[in-house]
Image 1 (spheres, rainbow, N blue to C red):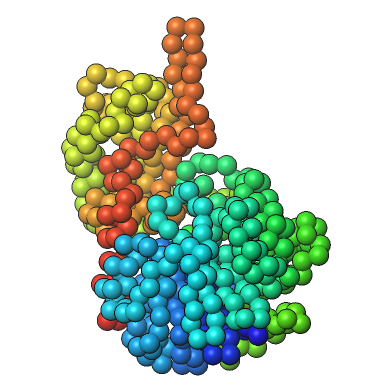
Image 2 (spheres, one colour):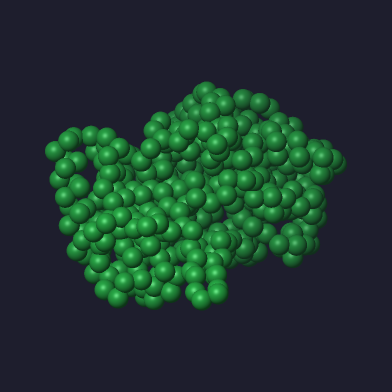
Length: 463
């Protein structure tokens, strides 16, 4: 028999007779650049968590790879012992962070290459995620009698499902992906409709996998405080709706909600879920009603997080000098320049202070000499609006697009087309148009590494 306890979001404690496995520990608010909180909130008694034999990390996203929680674990041998095996993907940034936190016994996993620990066999499963530049894996856990699969955020193919069946037949229990997140769609003026192809693929995966029992997994957080309005734009499906749709799509698969503090007992005879029976974690406040998908509601304006008037004035002066100096120089030698010229791009960048006042700069990429226009352009077909506090952090190398692109204080849109003699051409709306800020401050491995190492410095000796 296997016993699975949900701690929060994608963090689970999976126990066999002789082995305890912890997955993706994210235990503290705030998370993901301090934009999000766990939802539902939890009451976690850290002193009652048992020692673990295996720590499994699925991938580098911050809601699965939380430096603060990892820093806490390495300093608490009651949970993480010297003999604990760490399973991690082949991701140099992730591995470097673990080593910087003084983790040992790190094992790089390979998809479908099984690992035996005491009485369990652990088998990483592949992911076909195309949007990320780093590897990710799900995890099969088998104790010789039953098999559990944690899909996490992975995307799988019929061939992957077929191989899972070849290994273990019909699975006994699955933590299945259910939520097509729309994070960032608001900021980038993308559609707010449910991505039906993606959502239906989750149901199709469940139908093809056909486990005996399914619970929705890996989506238990929300935006906090000043970012709260984004809860109406980011989460189009609830766990309850997924289970209702799954019941219609695959009526022969048993299913249940699975909340922090719930324990699933998985045996050959079936699955029994004891609600709120964990000794170390319970739901503190079921605040999931704060996540209501209504992408037509009032939107919070862009404002700087710097409230001091003198600091605001100084920030705007720094921004002005940067945009009219370094920014223009970098755009004039950018490898996207000819594309911007070809599409007759009329660009505006607008920077907002804490009062909501703003200053904008217009650039006509059709001019032979790239310069800031002294009068407003007749139209804008490429726009970037950003809080002065955020662009200052980008200039100083103090933040990443993980924060800026999700915080609601950066917004963009484009309506790109060009007209010629008897012709009208438009840029394909399903392709991202190059954004000047992203070209000058590229979202790359260096930015990602700096983000994580900043967290390491913050939490390494202070978790």
